Image 1 (tube, helix red, strand yellow):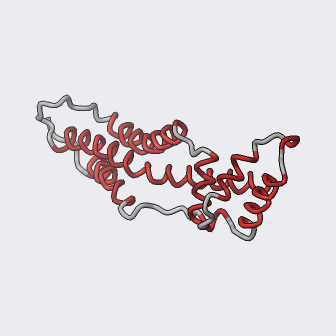
Image 2: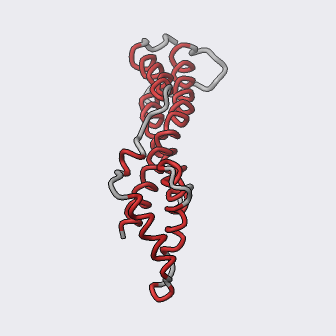
Image 3: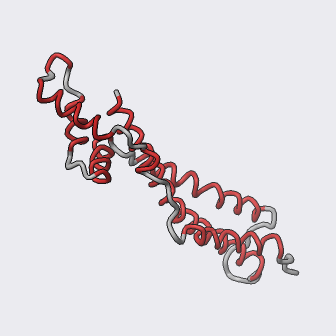
Length: 168
């Protein structure tokens, strides 16, 4: 039904936004580890930390690039947005006072048990949703500082590829 399309679309958009919100944190954490590995290997060759073999630094950088994508995806997979939560968010954004959430709860009612009042709730919610586009109600946005979260990884890459190997 049209109600299901709106609710599932809202759920998908909320999940995508949550993924975009988680990505910078994962990027910052793995970028910091890659930066530590490249600094230790290239700039502090005599440090007490174990030195990575030179051929491993590009592998560490690739892993640090891929890990945020995997981490954010796993976090999202573990905590998906429920249809009822998406319906409640549609209500909030359109100021519908729980019309969509109530209609969603009633939409699971078997067809033989639908009373005229339930039919009214379902029709009312669908009429209120008509003309609205889920993409416009739920725009995807990066957090303000999200690009900066990739800075440690960029610095690690610069150190790895631009700084000469230490002389033993």
